Length: 226
Image (cartoon, rainbow, N blue to C red; front, side, top):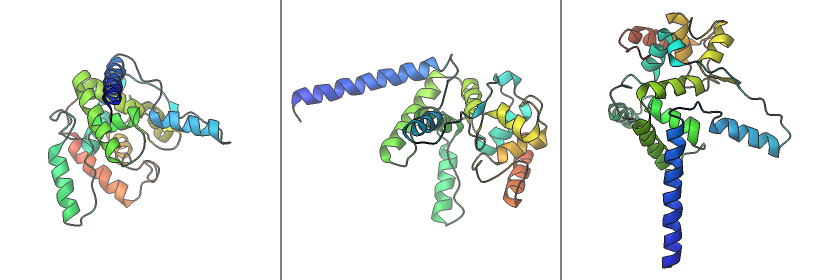
């Protein structure tokens, strides 16, 4: 590589870093207008014949979302949310041990990591994507507070086909606002988040029921974040 090419690469890298910092920094104050998956589906509809239907999404400030739901999501997705800085190394170690012992695979993604994937990253399992996920996770933890991370997560998480965010999910599945869900309903909503296209909070299978029961037991240990 020539010196000129090396300088160009460095300048491009620096520009990308600056743009990513601005991008993440703005979302500390502005609500994201779309997610990467929404942009991907829109682009595919333009390139193909399938009509794009924007997912139902109703933004709700964190203070208007029921503590039942915030606690259920923390219990089901990231119980050490307030204790880590984007990476839960305890959960990662346990997931690695489960893998070695041939137990059922478990996820080790924190809420911050999930937000990074949802808002900024493409689908895939390449090392480049893993590096980008780690990079954006660090940026989010540095530039946002925990309250903002949880607020954006609850408003952008995929809760099934055509449903994005807590308010849309609560209205679709239980015909009420996310401000009004009961502890049982909140646990059911949280229990399907690992696989919202296969599982249903209103038609739960045995696995979802067991998961919801565990979440119900753990909800009392979770903090209230408003």
